[in-house]
Length: 158
Length: 204
Image (cartoon, rainbow over all chains, first blue to last red; front, side, top):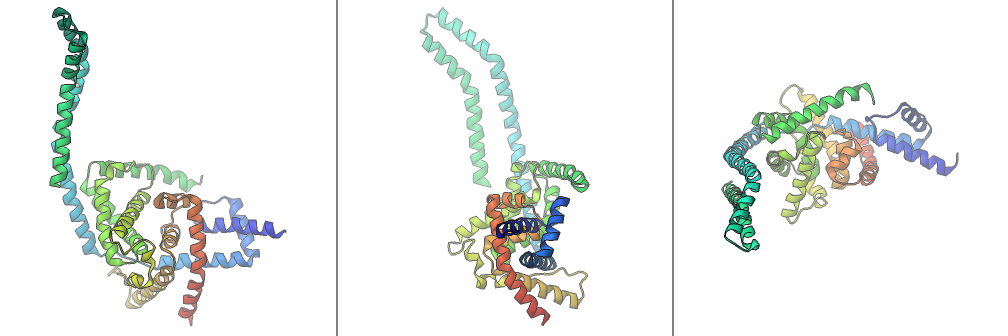
């Protein structure tokens, strides 16, 4: 086998070695086994990985129970705050949805109303159309402003 | 796909979806359960990443607070631990930047890392002999790992201790797969003489 081929085999073996424990095809496993058995460098690499894995697994770090409890309490308290915020936001979301629904339904009627008024009073088109625009956007603008103000208020108080 | 993977994948997806629902509702029981389940793994990751137990404990709390605040960003389709570790990693980087003298690289300073060896053990079960042996083993591994760059130590730990796949490690670290691989190769290369040396010292 040429040195280039040996190098390629070693690279493939190393790829398989670092993926140990993950899913490998039977073909890959067989290749790895036979290559490691015949290549001193990869044998050494394999031993290093085995040693590192065994050593790391025997090394234990335990979290301090008091610290874990303190974290749980802190998280619980903050979760309660966030849920309370969600509760206060709910009526706003409902009213926003209702306002949007009403806007969709009433928009054609409103348009017709403004159009009739414009023609009846001989108003320039731009005027009654601007009036329609202001009227149509007023509820959504108001809800949006309240929503943003409440968000900033919540941020400031939290 | 193996039979185990066939069985495990839907279970993981269901579990992920359940966690995602709990996080969206800010459900305290879900959060309590997650903290219980991932406490040791998260702390171990933070300790290895920062090289400082006290700093890691502060970040442990902050990580869970962020999990709570950003819970709606977890979609339940990926593994929860990769998402959790990615959050923890970002916090380490942010906190290191704030502590202007520290950076991920600076945290590899061996003097800083002498704290890593001071680890706590569960009070239950092990005999004094086992306890002492475990502590020695732990210190030996930590000492070997502490000589690696933080980024190399991180991938070695995620691959061999957390048993994450290379793709999952790439997800946690935000690095391309090729970078993850090269960090792993270099990490193992750097680890080899250390483990051999400490192994000989222990066996002598």
